Every structure is written in C-alpha cells, then in structure tokens.
Length: 368
Length: 112
Image (cartoon, rainbow over all chains, first blue to last red; front, side, top):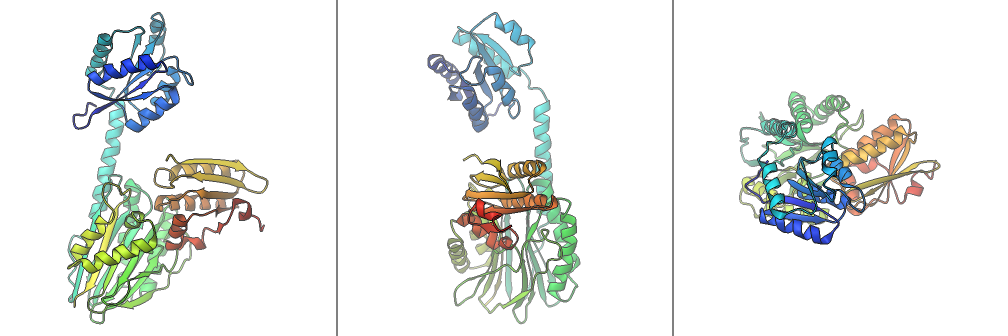
C-alpha cells in the first residue's frame, strides 16, 4: 500500500475553508501531496483522479454527507478514510455503523492527534480482499501479455532479395495486435491483425486468428484461403461480439508480385522507390461483423527499392488526420536504411507516453 | 474529458447522445446505455455523435455491438452528426457501409 516511488496522495473533503487549510498543512507535514475539496461530490472525483491513499472527510457537507461520500468511495477506492465530526458524542454511534471509514476524530482536534491517528492507520495492515483482487487482475494481464507475445514470429523471415522486419510495443492493458509471417516455397505469407478489445479476451482471439490463418496456408488462391479462414473466425467471434481488422498478403519473391486482402484494416501503405506513397484501400469490413462476407484480393508489384508498410491504429491515433499520417509514414519509410530502422521509427510516431493502444509495424522492402 | 451518455425516447426512435472521446474507457458505458434502451423496448436507436470528436477501435467495437443488439431485437442502429475523425475511422475500416450515417438524429429514421 505504501508506495515509496511516488509521493503519497491525500484528499481533504471539508466545507469550512479554515479547517480545510489546517488539515492540508497537517497532511503536508506528513509528506502527502494534498488535494482539497469543499463538497462531497468533488471530493469523490478528487479521490478518483488522484488515486489517493488517504481521505479526511467531514460528516456535514453542503451536498451529500460524509457517510454517502464514503459509500461511493468504497466502490472504487481502498484509501484510508478518517472521518471528522463536530460532535464527540457522535463517534460512538458512528462506530456502530458500517460507514466504511477507518477511524473517527472529533472537532476541535489537535494537529498532533490527527497526525498520530494517520500514522497508526498506515501501520495497520490493509484488509487482504482488495489487494488480492488487484493482484488477480495484474496476474491476468501478465498472462494475457505472455499470450500476445507468444503470437509474434520468433524467427526473422529470410526471403532472398527482401528485407523484412516487424516491431511491436504493447500497452499495459494488452490489446489484440499481432503479426505473423512464414516462408513458403516461392516467397512468404504475412498476416497483420488487430482484434478489438483488451486483455485476455483480445489475446485469445488473436491466438485463434493466427492459428486459423496458418491453417489455410496451402490453399492455392489467396481469396479462397481468406474466405475460408474468415468464415471460421466469424463463427468463433459470434460468441464474443468482437471483430478483427486484418491485412493478409502473399509475396512471390522472384517477380515481386504481392497479392493482398485488406479486411477493415486500411493502414497498409505502398511506398514506391519513385513516386508517391499510396494507402491500400480496404476491400471490405473487418472479419467477424457480417456472415457471408467476401473480400476481393488485389495485387501490386514490388520493384527494387519499393516498400510495403503496415501499422496498427495506435500509429494513426497519434495523428490529427489521415493525410498527416500518410505523410509521416512515407517520410520515415524513405529515411530508414533498413526495415528494422523503419519499424523503430514508425513506433516512435506514436510516443509511448501518450499511446493508449498497442503499436505494431511491419515493413517488407525489396532490396535494390 | 469524462465520457458521458444520455438518452431520450422519442415517438419513433430513441436518441443516445455521446459526449467526449469514444475509447476503451467509454466503450463499455455506451454498450450499457444502448442495452438499457433496447431492453426498455426501443429497438430503433440513433447514436448522436455531434459531440464526439475521437473514436478508436474499442469505440467502433461498441457501436458494432450495439448495432447487433438493436438488430437482434428486430430494429436497427444508426449514427448521426458524425465528426471528421470518426468518419475517417468508419471509412478506413469500411464500416461506413454497415453503419449508416445521417446528418442529424431527426433524419436517421426519417425515411421509414
């Protein structure tokens, strides 16, 4: 509970400005960073926003009373709550009620006494229920992250005449991004997908998509392969109400011919050595939304020096417009000497500090 | 800004107003509100997006989940007053063909 890495946050909920100021001073002497609230509702919000570990709470407030504030706090917070009352004789009654407060103190109070009570509160062990629940969620996220990580190709793909690279940066909440590739007798197959949602649910859907896409590798025509895979995925997704955006491609390395299908992804770019970058337009909605959907395949030719770049929507979200996104992706693609360098620069387009989503990039460049 | 949803049941449809970013945090709340509306007997739902300037894939997922719920109940879900970034996401994902956008909530079910 007591964190040493960041300053401890406290919230003072008190309508009397003088008493509020005094409480702030008392808490600051204990090295808390203090947020003030003059009524109950803004107090609840302040605790939510600061993730406070300690709350001092006046019983009589102008909007909702201290008991109600405490009830609402307990829906999301396990902060220590010290309740203040103007009547000493009320404390016995309060002790008999299940208010959710940790301790009571009557006004007028001495600063020393308040500080002693707070120190005592923090020495007391927390009830194990809430931390156990937190731990369970952390465990599940860690397991989801392991699943997600395991979906990425372990080996770099070696296709004669091409430089292929991928990069992935997960968020703490674990999204449904992944990419997969494998060599074939005449080149390679590539799948880039984003399963809607977060956590274990998204990771498991991504795992299914990867396995199903691999199972159709031997189907000769890409449109047939994708059609049969997407029908399987759609019937699986029906249970979860989720969907997957996908870009799937097959490369014939000798000719440079790339056949591809874009199902609602829309974030693949063809960056030719000469000429303007083109965004490859999606051929249909994501997989899992409509039954009996068909996605036509399209083709392009990778000439020496040309690149195919695919990114996840985490990169798009960091831009104000699609035009700006295309310009920046084209720029970093042309500036990078290798596909690895380009991937690293693409991830940088969505700075880790602000990105809400996973960020993934794959680059296939035909060597000059 | 905190995402907020409110709804109003009108003569021929129910209007759900969405204010703020429609992202991973807001998406489950939108589903909750639309489910409540559909469960309450209104299966023709318009989501008014006039005050939603940002939507990510979780938000799109919520709209699709809501569309499925409304269709399951024999109705439909339409969207109105779509702002540029939201329009872009719908076009990118080709969802503009599935989720029909109307200029205003009044017009969404105006033709039938």
